[in-house]
Each structure stands twice: as C-alpha cells, then as structure tokens.
Length: 463
View 1 (tube, one colour):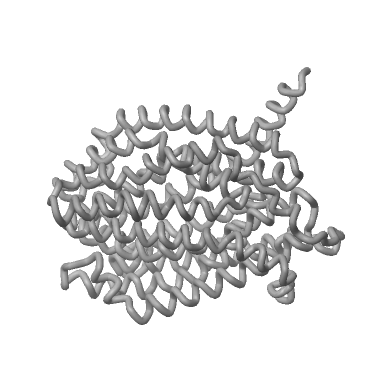
View 2: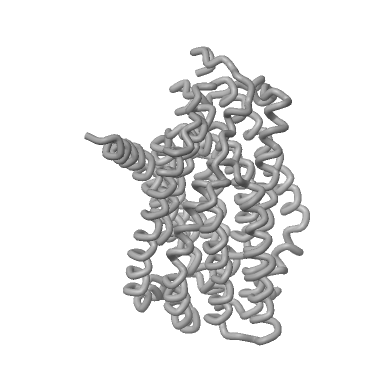
C-alpha cells in the first residue's frame, strides 16, 4: 500500500470522526431553530420580525465571541504538540475574555434596548413586545458565553460528541418549554413570543449545568480551575491577542454589516424582514454539512501545522476544497428542487412572504458553492493557521466596500424589490470566494502557531 493511499485512509478516518458528530450537532441546533421558528410563525409576521430583530443583536455578540474563540487555533496546535499546560492556560484566558465581552453586551442591551430595536422595528405597537423579548434574551448572552467557550474548547481537541449529547438535551427542554409557554400548554402560562425567550433562557442554563458536570466529572483537559484563568504567560498572551485581534475586528465588522443588512431589509417592510429571517433559518439547514467539514478542516489542518507538517496540511486543504465544491453543487440542486414548496412549512404567514421566500431560496442556490468554499477556507483553513489579518481585510472589502453599499443603494435609492436586493446581498459571498481562492492557492495562510510559543510541561497533572 502506497504512502498516498495510507494518507488518504488516515484522512478519511479522521475526517469522519470529526464531521459526523459536528454535523449531528448542527442538525440538532438547526432543527431546534426551525421548530422554534415554526412555533413563532404561528403568531404572525410581526412575531417573526421581533425575533429577527433580537436575533441580529445576539448575532453580533455571537460573532465577536466566535472571534475570541479563535484562540482555539492555538489550543488545537498545543494539543497536537501535547503542550497541555499551555492549552489549559489559553482556554482560561479565552473563557475570561468571553465572559467580559458578554457582560459588556448585557449592559449595552439592557440600557439601550429601545433605540437598538428601533433600527429594525418601525411599528410602535410592536415595540413593547420587542423590549420584553430582548430583556429576557440579554440574560441568555451571559450563559451562552460560558457554555459556548467550553463547547469550543472541547471541539478544539476533537471532543465534539459531548456537545452533541448536551445539545440534544437542551433542544428537548427548549422545545417543550416553548410549546408550553408560547401557547399556554402543559400547565404553563400563555406568554406568546416572550415564552420563546423564557424557554431559551431556561434551556441554556440547563445545558450549561449539564456540560460543566460532564466535563469536571470526566476530568477532561478543559476542566480548568479559577487560578488557571490568569495563568497564561504574558508573552504567549501577547502573541494570542496579536493573532485574534484582527479576528475580533473581522467578526465584529461582519456581524455589524449583517445587522445593517437586516436594517435595509426591514426598510422594505415587515414581510421582507420576515423573509430575510426565514431565508437565514433555512440556509442554516442547507449549510450544516459544510460547517462540519470546516470544523474538521480547522482541527486536522491545525494539528498538522502545529506538528510542522505543511505538506500534509496543504494536502488536506486540497481535499477539503474538492469536497466543498462537490457538496455545494449537490445542495444547490436540492434547494432548486424544494424551493417551490418551502413556503408550505410556514402556513400562518402572509401571502407576500410565501411569494418571495421561494425566489430567495433560488438565489441562495446560485451562490451555495461560494458559501461552502468560504466556510471551509475562512473558518477552517485560514483560522487553523491564524491568518486573521487577511480575513479582516477581506471582510472590509467584500462586506463594507461591495455588498453593503450595493444593498443600501438598492433599497434607499433605486427602491428595488426584495429579490433584487437579496441578489445584491449575495455579492458578498461571491466576491469573498474569488479573493479567498487566491489566498488558498498562495499557501501564505499556513503558519505554525505553536512553534513560536515557549515550551511547557505536559504532565499528567495538567490533564
């Protein structure tokens, strides 16, 4: 058996072990989002618009925290080099940073929730419901920051099955509570759209508790103590911050850009904002497979870079790129086939939403291969090598210099219909794929992050 055959077998085996649990986790998360959306849509277009507005706020926070979780690139490479003390110290720093950012977001949303919501909701009658919903969801920010930090840390060392099991438990609790609290069933009060927020809050708290009990009872590498929150050496901390600061800026600018997209679609009316939100929800389903491959690419390529094996890392990168193209084409065909029937899932919404949703899905299908490639390249490969300064520059060009101006001109100057504005919105992904392809081929993103860190003991006591 040749070396290439052995490497292919090794690649396939390791990839399956990472992709399958990750995709199942995404399936759980997106299934919950869809079920939750189905319950909320029964309350009408206005309820969906409220959750869409609140969702944009939480999206900004989640993207900034995702940037902070870019520290897992170091953790993956430390794990590959068996530098467990540095792995734990890096996680402590990541957890502390995430909590600090979520506390800041909680304060901002709690103080200025009405001005923030007014960016999306122009109907004064909807504002009280929106404020009530966001007030509850602000507490979810704090819980999610801790839970997601632990989940990301587990994922960085390939322990994604744990988060899958916890996600299943959380989904069951959340759907049950949503059913009871939205409709007043199971002996619970009828709270309408606020019931969805309470269900999310309680389920988030329960999932955090289960995850912590599991981690600390099993003594995984990420079961850190309080003192380890501050144990990362100063030189390494500076190096980590230097790497993730562009990523924080990247995710922050990208998420704010996405919020402004929602503002623009909201200016087209409640139906347009509702369609935009439903399109995002369904897109999460279409893309859950590629998120699994992007996660596998980050872990597998990151470990090879940490082991100073750039040739094997690039071989893996080529394989993941081919997978992305093939998967993108297949999913595009599937979307085209189901787009005429998608609106049937949401029978309680207006005819205007039903008419536009199928067209939006067809536009998504045309750009789906670009979506897939961007996820694998940016989230998987480039982050594995800490190439965050480049991705920050890419976002400034594709989001802020190309797509956002085009969308705002389309809405406020040309007064284009929803479908044309959505096509302008997709220019971001297409231009990003063109720029990303050149970077992928250059191999400049391949960096050994662990190689420049000081050596640390990997004693069993660190486990």
